[in-house]
Image (cartoon, rainbow, N blue to C red; front, side):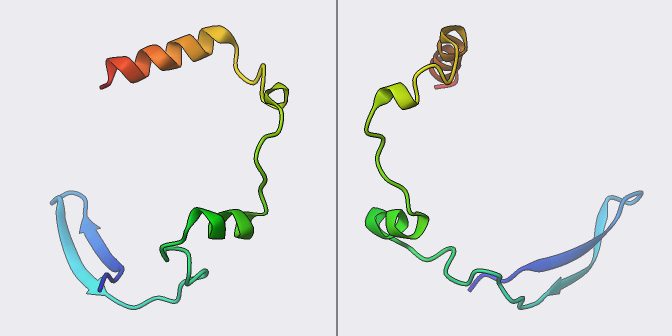
Length: 75
């Protein structure tokens, strides 16, 4: 089981001090639960894009080209 850890750090010595593990209450306990795409769609209330015109022009062509170049460069 994973638990959050609080660590106090001594910056000048670059060492950790007083390591403490504790259980904390989560705001959304189901956040990390495995869900199907259909469950996520229902929770978020989203629907598919019905027209590409709705998203066209969101990014200039030069930005898209730069983004694609970066993706290929970082592979």
